[in-house]
Length: 306
Ligand code: NAP
Image (cartoon, rainbow, N blue to C red; front, top):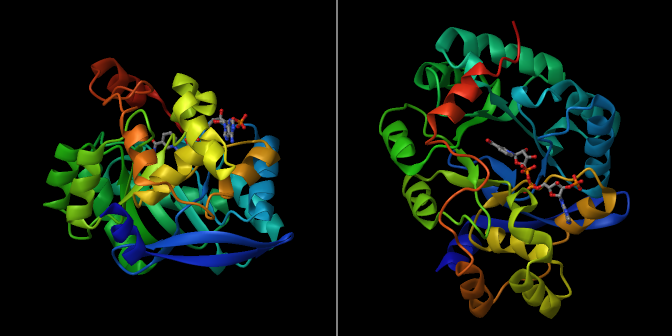
């Protein structure tokens, strides 16, 4: 059923990069906008030079979706790489996120201007609320207005656990296009995916490699599956999310890994593979704890500007 769901919503296309064609798949968001199903994340790449070079390498490798955030402190470097790449703007899909500090109606309007300015862009493809914290309903009203004006082609949210997403979708005027949450073989969140499907919200995986936790890159189950297809454990982890309709944004600052991580559109997993991976689910995050008051306080305390 999951594969059928993917087949209806996805279509393959080729990106011409310097070395020839790269196979890519795209999803259609709730308002008809197309988004690549695989992109490039730049969390924890605050160094401007490394970020600029990594994004440039990723674009040359064939990535077209770049996922940054105001709180990653690298929007300027991402913007420079975009400009240097020379790739036409309409072939790119650029996402950034509104930080907790700016979660109110007035502050969100200003924050979007600052992000566009740093990225050196006229519009965003996707603008996300980074955390369900602060006055995120007020912030989202500003994002809806920006969407009406064409400053952002799509708007969405991150880290909205099912009870938060349900309340949000029952309240807002413009349904979120995407909910970016932690999704990998050790935290599969099938219930969250079912709710997103109900509301027509596309799931996007952050930490698709569990940020390397639980030995993902050498995990015996993923490695064994990969051997059948001539793929690595990392590639199996990505393919598994793609097969269940999830958008993935793996991060790497290494060219060989960037190439490996995008080379996942020429195989698919069997039902047997999927049930072996289903057994890896631990049912919780080992990276963040949104239910811990100290974690919430720490995010409020992270200031990205005066
Ligand atoms: P991730 O993509 O799960 O893992 C990144 C780690 O895996 C890096 O240490 C990277 O190392 C390594 N790696 C990448 N490809 C590899 C390969 N083929 N073989 C071996 N190691 C490999 O973690 P993430 O960066 O946290 O998540 C991805 C993106 O999601 C972020 O960059 C960000 O855009 C987004 N995100 C969003 C949120 C949110 O709250 N909305 C939270 C976290 C992340 P090297 O870089 O050294 O190669």
